[in-house]
Picture: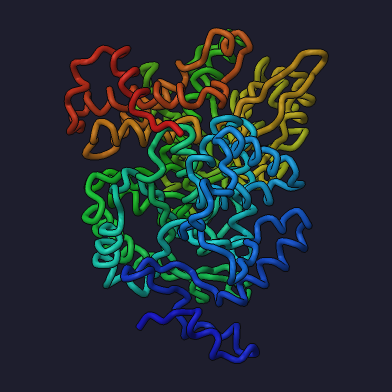
Length: 604
């Protein structure tokens, strides 16, 4: 039986507050089992005030002021003697300016994130007007890197529901729960972003705090891709957490017990995918930040049956392929090397690394290499070193299944470190998805510069605190010759009198276009060709000025335009694969299709 935490917690002695395993920390939403985390109202209000004021006095603006009982509701009619209302009627421009001033006054990115979240819940149009007005500076606030800290502290800074919080305890009722929820909506969602919080960025298992990732991604779907915010739905699936300090925290809002097994999780996901597809017809479901084994298992299981994709595996692969296409050409121009001879070393063996490597193989197959030949251009290093057929854990059959595709069979020597692999392979490109800060050490980077006139170095781990290499160090240790792209943003740098702009291989450049393209053409499924087409479109979306500056990616300030071009590529690929159910775009020219997509983008 579900219980209201707000009704139950008041009956529990304070000494027993951490013994919550018998409680379901959710409540029903109206008549719908919407599973919104609901701390005790008085406790939550006082705790929230204390936390925010401890962070900074300015944060007090986040705590709603008490409304005197005698004050008049805005729904009440003014006295008949009043000809007009005395309530100020600010213009939209004034509201936007006021919000911008509030943000400028806040001293930390987390406080800005919280204020923007509050604004989005209360006035979505104002929120997206602010995003559109200053996207370059606000995207890192609403998403990476700031969203990482927000997820870590989600239970501390929680101010209200941001989507659906679904408990594994309600697996058997999930179909009815989502069906009831759908009845409360004026319009059905076009895109769902769902996570189980098990591997948030490079920060590990954050449980229910993963809601911040789902919501943050959807904010970018609207700001960058043009999806109507009313047609998005953020979902977190609560299956417990293996984060022991989080489970022991009295403020934690999720199930305070260890995470369930993959078998149990798969059963829950079966129920969710089926129920969501039934309740919200035609919805695209994006999987986000599931731990590696589950991420690959779910993608393989559902990709043919549902309109879905995994952004960590496919979206990351797409955006990095887009940047690598440009970097490889520039590096080959500098060295005179045949583009087919590029050699890529990966530091990291998780789902993102394997997904990126598989997508980057498309660069080589497009140049005429076979799949086997393309795979041989990649070397993957995990925590035990280079993945080889003679490594003890590989011989014993203990290697995670998703890594087996990239086992090296051409050596019997073990290479336990990045430095030893660089000496063995002498790569042209180095890609980091290790979530280990500073893993690309000065000797390794300098050696890459000795081996290559223009070394390709992509430290992609998020957030910045997990990044393998800073832009400043990359420039310094390669004498400015590096072709650089990171996962999190770095500021431009004045290097030897020249302003240098770093590339950012952020999924933000592709996933809004992939999602929008799949939705607008009503693709039955998201195919490999659609993902690759997004990368190709991205690589071709740079302006002449951006190409002249030797940028690897278009500037994020043009994200709406870029997303439209990516979406066009995705639609064309869906047509080639014959999965587009909306066929009227087939007869349009590329120019007509691009204009149609731009007109369909939601505007604040």
